[in-house]
Amino acid sequence: MAAKDEVGRYGEDVAARSLEHAGWEVLARNWRCEHGELDIIAVDGGELVAVEVKTRRTATFGSPQESVTRDKLYRVRRLVATWLSRQDRHFDGVRVDVIAVTVARAGAARLEHLRGV
Image (cartoon, rainbow, N blue to C red; front, side, top):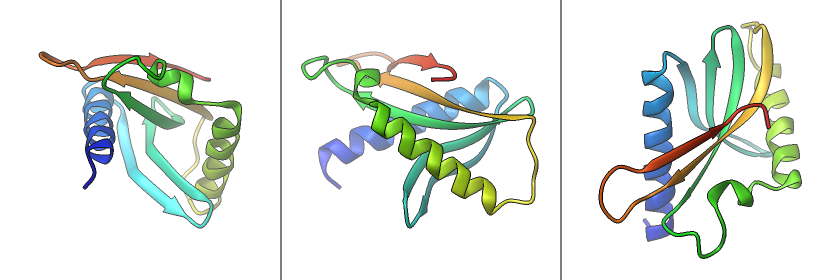
């Protein structure tokens, strides 16, 4: 696995643990279909949340959340609609969140959770 992929996987692991610690139900990770992939699909209360996780080691190329463009959010929303069309379960609402993970040289990673982007 390439170093970039390992960093991304680490960020997704940290984000999923954080959500579970907060009492969320993680339904799927790295869910794929013919249109792309959702990093995390979870339930917060009764609301379905698609979580896009972006991880960086440095701010050289900007903050992690800056890499979530309008086009990326459009794709995530389309993927959520596809995921929902394949489910029998109903939810109180649907939203997209971004979790930005910055990996520190030493110590714990820093998370910033942006809700309803």
